[in-house]
Image 1 (tube, protein in one colour):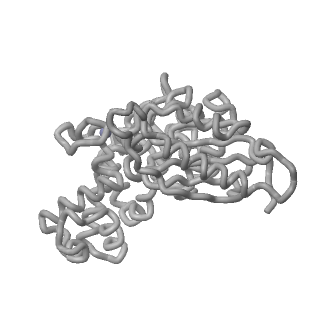
Image 2: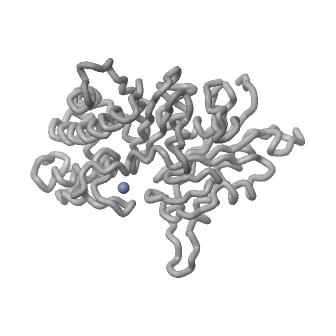
Length: 346
Ligand SMILES: [Zn+2]
């Protein structure tokens, strides 16, 4: 493999797994390492954030990648092999690299992610950003949003993350907290969200939202085959049961996916009204399933967006980098001046 320019490590901390990639400056992935995301909660009354296990897992993935890039006896230190490590974490990340709020990462809240990782990985530079902001960077530089002046990345996994390109730059807001699109409330009387509110978009249009819609359908007798396969208990029906049944042609499972698709389109229409992107990039673990209902999503979007007849079509694309958008983008952010005006295509 020919390596172009400096090599960086990009790490995407998801709700269930941590994915790390070694990426060169042409976006070529040189190595991959994974670890499960620890589900460790703070011991009660200790005041500990409980984030130690998360930090340890990130360090482990980074070190495996850094060590893997070493050639035997070349005598180089790790900062010579790798120019920087970029890490994307779910939740509100401030400009100093602290994770301030993290409803989908138990134990991650109030964690000095950048400081802790910098200490462990020194002398390698560490940058930390929101996971979906990393994902939009990956898709903007190498993927489905390439060349767009205005684009929105929607990562559909355990929750929904958002990354925004506005006026040809990453939009982070005043505090670094912009793009929390999953917690846009679409039904104030809706189901409770881990963020403490009710009826957030991600309760309807994410992987966990799909599981909830599926259990509702199973209780209502609208998902017989899937329910039988899950052992007859509606509460045992999972999102994966629906996506695999829909892929196999089960029309009732497809109808549940279309229901999710309508909620997805509702949020996209709201975002289009505010941000006017030329493209939405859909990424995250739910993307393969969404492929089955992408046409109904487009149709619903056209009905829900303001003034469809007066506006050119907004592209709704699937992430070209697949589940790697976030990790590749974290690697891109690592090799740039983090959070500087330099967030532009090379
Ligand atoms: Zn919420």
